[in-house]
Length: 107
Image (cartoon, rainbow, N blue to C red):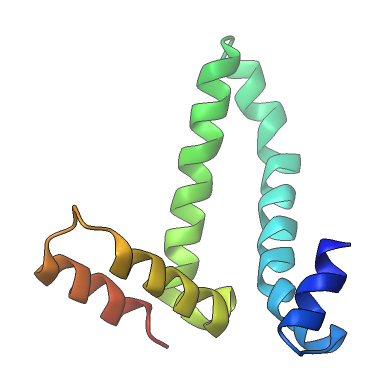
């Protein structure tokens, strides 16, 4: 129901809405594929579940950083603009670093 309401309020269509979801779906597919191959290896070598989770998160961050450096548009321009707006609102980041981060997010 919220999706229907959001689409109506934003005066957009389903195709535009689904286009904004595409980068996230591609990332989910890629990270799921990584988990399918690496989880058995990691779980055999690490006994504590929390360490398995931490390992997975770190590997996911590395993969996302590499994708970001190679192809920023993989994440979608709308999503990068949204992230830029969030970073602009964060007060505890120094302005010179904030501008540097925002300029790196532009495609």
